[in-house]
Amino acid sequence: MTDGEGSSRGPGGARHQVALGVRSRRPDLAALSGRLVDLLRATSCLERITPERCDALLGWTTTREALAELEEHGVLERADDGYRLPEDLRLRLEVDTLDSLPGPAVRQHYRRAATLLRAEGEYAEAVRVVARVADWASVRDILGHHGEAVLAERCDWASAVPDGVLVRDPWLLLARA
Image (cartoon, rainbow, N blue to C red):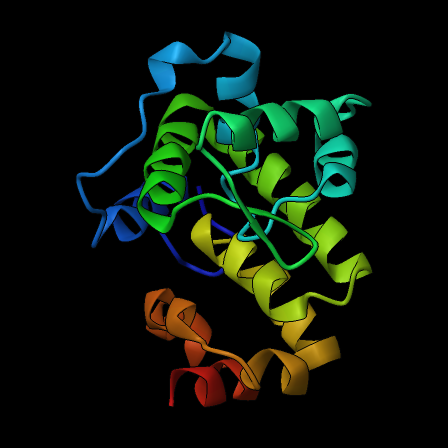
């Protein structure tokens, strides 16, 4: 899938980028219900998980209890008014999610997550989310409106931007620098 700019990197290309550096440690997810594992996979695109984000992203109303249960199982850690998955587990779940959803569905899910993040003023995380699925049009849109805020944080996602997209956008050039 492309974004109309000659990039052949679609969700498949992002899968391999996300998988880099993943460690082997993983809590036992077999002890969890399917619903809890589904919640973890669906929210693995988020660095910080909150009940409000989960409810908005998934259309659920019971994620507060589910997140508390995941914390009790030792899968989630409390952090910054929410929860975080250990990074190695989050990346593994994200790879599973990217591999299990068809391209259009995964892009739609990640765009929805980025929209939620933008509404919260989490612009850098929103860029990281859409960059994972090579949605360069959305990356440019967020940078065009909130470039300074995005560039104030780490821009490790910028290395995945295809050169053909990069050269046409000064914000992307700055992010890559």
